[in-house]
Amino acid sequence: MKKYTLLLILFCFGISCEEKDCGCHSPEETMYFPPIDSSNWETKSVTSLGWNQSQVQPLLDYLAEKNTKSFMVLHNGKIVMEYYLNGHSASEIWYWASAGKTLTATVTGIAEFEGFLNINNKVSDYIGTGWTSIPLAKENLITNKHLLTMTSGLNDALGDDVSPTNLQYVSDAGTRWAYHNVYVKLQDVVAQATNQTWNNYFNTKLRNKIGMSGFWLPLNGLSVYRSDTRSMARFGLLALNNGKWENDQIVPINYMQNATTTSQSSNLAYGYLWWLNGKSSYRLPQTQFQFNGKIIPSAPDDMYCALGKNDQKIYVVPSRKLVIVRMGNAADAVNMALSDFDEVLWEKINALIN
Image 1 (cartoon, rainbow, N blue to C red):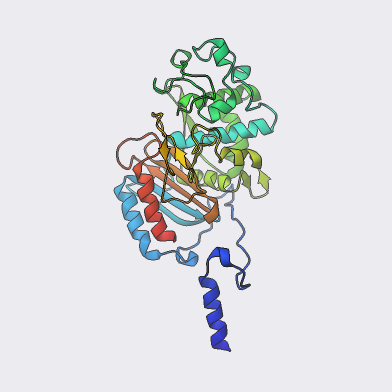
Image 2: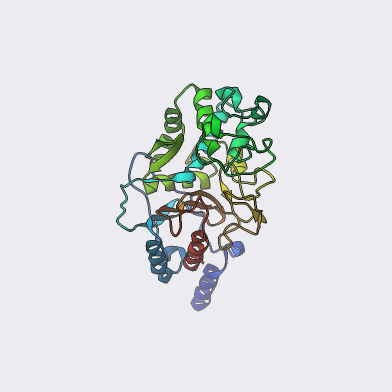
């Protein structure tokens, strides 16, 4: 009888999560959130998850070779991997680049929930007219949601400058997807709508509530977030939990769900400044060509990502309860957001976790 019982236990623990009806599984682990006023953060081991320990070093070797400065993996909120490479350290800050666009999208959702703005209202309702150089009738077509979804219709071929003279007409808002830094105008919208500085509202409503550190650095009319790696991971954990931190629903759940699903018909792989995997097609920055298939074929279909220039990454995978963060210099050539590095990195991650 003892031998039979042992064999039953071994069999039950070997089956997949979808087959957990044998009754021998322990209750599901509660999502963990690190304290907001402490550097303490609970950990778990690779082996405790049944992952392949032998694949840790090949992954780290690849990350080091590809100019990575930091790499973190959270499972259910707890740290499984945290590595600092190429001279970087846990206390050093680094830029998020366009991965920080998702911070702006998130705070916009908070401001809407608090009644300060409506994403379906036109941008000029909040920051006045003349913020572009296009005809007023065309400018008034552009809503906050168009900025969130990269469908402003403004010319994306004129560089990062978002001064009025550089914001020129290509098509009516909502008819064309093009990756454009005009999204940063949402920070002005939030500031005007709340009658606060962007920094103050961001810090009070998001950063401080989840224990992040970091700051916005003005750069040529844009605004780039800089922080340590754990702060980036904290934000990823908030996103994994649909805007909830412990018992505090910081961002409305319906807004977060909309932000991380297809937001328009031109680019199925784009939400509210989040990139989405698992779609049938996608578009990339600086091109109007539509590619068939997923943006990262090796990655899970339900993954959504914050992607920044030179391979700043937050991968969020709800089905696996994973948050994965990568900071560093460009893995290969300088790139806007997505690169071949994503695909190879996920091949390495899969070898570890599957």
